[in-house]
Image 1: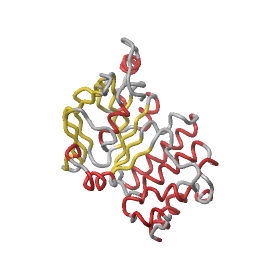
Image 2: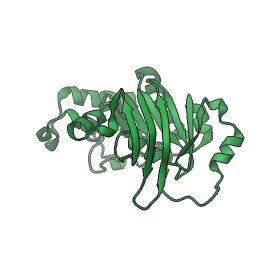
Image 3: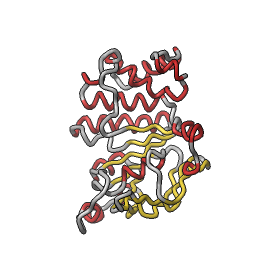
Image 4: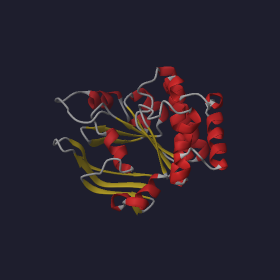
Length: 253
């Protein structure tokens, strides 16, 4: 489904966020990308949907070269790739339902989006996703009236509106308390199992990675240092993963 070939990213200040990263993700996998802040996890996800352009290397999604797309073809591809953010990325002054409907903008006319006029099927889908995520009663509330866990559920519902084949979750629980974090990860695992949506989820806690990932990709200083099953992530490997060999600079997460 997804293939990266020697992908590197060097930012303008000289920070090397990714170094020759190659990996293949099969359809239906739940993969946790694990590492400390600055390991390159966020850059990796953002290169996949081209929110960040890699400096070198190639990325393929279902045999289509993502790194060669632009304009309408890139927008069409992004409709198949849902994104969930650590900071939720909601419009606070808008209602929960309107935030969820933003996931349907790719198939809504510019005029319809401007006047908040969405197809009935999309409105029904938004309500369905909110009910499924147990926040249907919040549909009319402003997004800034919700708790962190509820806001992240809205972000997940918005991603589901795209009818994605893969969801990229960038530290989706970093701002949440432990109990709420597990609730959100339980939701992502259920979507993976029931809907068959591939999940790529950035985390920084080894215990959560072992609990939820069916495959763990551990990163350090922009490189993959482990790729395998959860039981292969030993305590020694986790210690080395988080040990600071020298001061690191660069992107967060």
